[in-house]
Image (cartoon, rainbow, N blue to C red; front, side):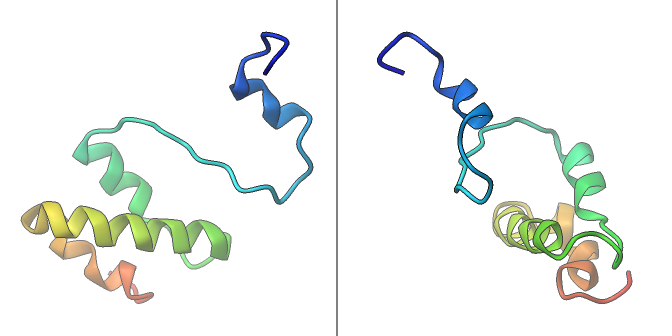
Length: 76
């Protein structure tokens, strides 16, 4: 970064397994689609979706209540 290379490009030289922080935008419809992961999805991705649901539900429970079974690891 000291040489003027954007920090976003660091992912090309960092080893796998390094913690990364992401910032992105999405509307409720897109978020609901993302949260509907099946049981065959990678466990790490399901865990990210579960944590996302916790935050989303805290801020907009009426929009995400029906996804509670998915957040709890059950079929909706």
